[in-house]
Length: 271
Image 1 (cartoon, one colour):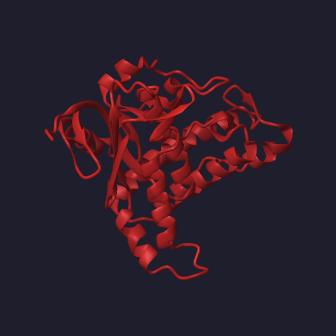
Image 2 (image 1 turned 90 degrees about the horizontal axis):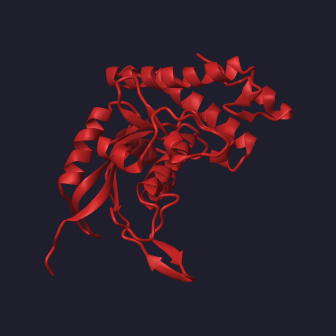
């Protein structure tokens, strides 16, 4: 069977600190909260590989139709792709939503990653993945530098994303993407809203607490590259926490925080 390239969206993810996660899983001892078991690590990898919103099959007119979604994982890298002209999906919006939710869920596990989304020629089956779109995604991932997933300029244009759109009463794709200090657009996992957690305010608080802890943990590392990642994450977290403080912990964006939960959010302080 002749193999040909297809026009596909391509997501390339690199799990940060993967080596230490693997070493930690091998030396895991029961009752040690600082170590991650192999089972926990594998569960996280499976979750990343499967995605959240964009599944391998969707219901169309009462029947299940397979999508063109493909996913591959090797060592610390995960690649997800699907046809650009996918008839059963919402296009690029699906993968952006997946990445956003994965960042929220993986951060809660203490796992950070960086990556890039591109569009172009790609061959992807159950055994192999190669093509210019992957080459570009790998190159962009290195430019990401920090724990962020960045988007190709062509992706932004095709998705019709509005620059600088703040989250409103409902989460939109545009509000999931933010422009960084260097002009690069990335999927924002700092400025969350209740809609990201099914309007469960306690879950919003738990996420922000775990995010704060993840950032603080990086401050203990001596590696200069990790120090750089910590500085970036700290600046992003403190910017979000400052807005929360300015709103006197009574609201997040346009969402009023229930009075009984406001004391919890007072713990989300800058540092």
